[in-house]
Amino acid sequence: MAKILAVLYPDPVGGYPPDYARDEIPAIAGYPGGQTTPTPHTIDFTPGQLLGCVSGELGLRRFLEDRGDTYVVTSDKEAPDSTLDRELPDADVVISQPFWPAYLTPERIASAPRLRLAITAGIGSDHVDLPSAIAHGMTVAEVTYSNSISVSEHAVMQILTLVHNYMPAHDWVTAKKGWNIADSVSRAYDLEGMDVGVLGSGRIGQAVLRRLAPFDVTLHYSDMHRLPKEVEEELRLTWHPDARSLASSVDVLSIHTPLHPQTQNLFDEDLIGSMKRGSYIVNTARALIVDRDAVVRALNSGQLAGYAGDVWYPQPPPPDHPWRTMPYEAMTPHVSGSTLSAQARYAAGTREILECWFDGRPIRPEYLIVDGGGLAGTGARSYTVAG
Ligand code: NAD
Image (cartoon, rainbow, N blue to C red; front, side, top):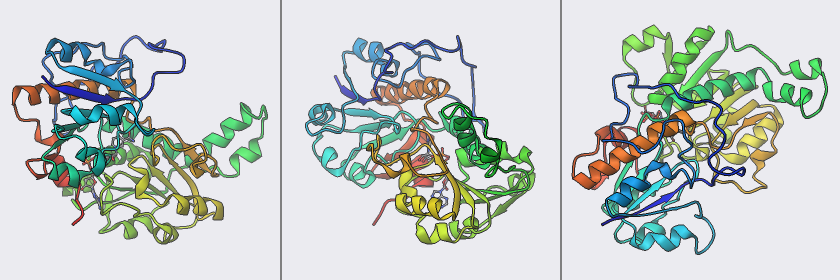
């Protein structure tokens, strides 16, 4: 029997379960392009429940305990001698979410001789040291597409939030009890007519482009895999061969690539400095794709008019992380991919991956990042490993 270790974010401060705002969520059967939503044999939760926190347990306890497996769920992952570190040495499977990542470092992987499967309940497996996972003979899988639309909606929201100067206007009327129209609008613009670009036109990037097209903007993108000509024509896209060409051509740039050696620290002082003065960056991909301090400097100097996103490093960030206090931001904690709608899909997808694993059936190729001794599936298409 297997030991499955899940590292999930803590329960709400008000206790579990929360009072839900709605009684149901829409049923989504498939994704753009024809991929189906997860297909486990069954689920033991009600879609719309809070599943991603410790008490939510991704809805997996009954399934795993009926099989005779051991299921350990914790949020304790950082302190020396954390529950993660104590439970890891005899774990067969680790489940983690990018919102509260169990950083599977080379040292942690080396401490876990039985570890064969790391599942990302969500999308983005950079919290796993992929070269070590490959060397260890592990499979790394994620629930591709489960929260791509959630994130694309969040990115569009953050673009509009920055350009329209929503956060300061909200503060004037609530926290500051004022009615300061001039203060609120002196940094407010329309998105209409602007040049807007995405770096990475995969599942999320393309969904962002599709959602922005009706705003009468000029759309740009860069990706090492160019989109089909019909899509470029339909959305009137300008393709750029690299991030520099894209960055210098747009007013708003939204980042949608995975974090891997080619993208780590890509938006450094130099690349941000090559953008038009007053550009906006939205980053719902991964924090380490941008230089943390270069972003702060660019906001203070006016090179950037705004920065928004929901990805930080590390997660959770320390209280003195400079993005908590920098100007012209519209930051959220890492929530865009963990709406209740998304949780239902990634919990079901996690169960689908576990069912395949236990039954010896192949995991869908689109769910695979590492398998068979190298990058596989989506991992082979969207990631690189150093060396
Ligand atoms: P995807 O694999 O469908 O698309 C990624 C795209 O990035 C691919 O088209 C790939 O070719 C492109 N790419 C990779 N490296 C590149 C490079 N150096 N230059 C240009 N393009 C490059 O993935 P997706 O589902 O669209 O997700 C993208 C990323 O978003 C994830 O890897 C994850 O890090 C992040 N994400 C964040 C959240 C969240 O909650 N904030 C949720 C889901 C995913």
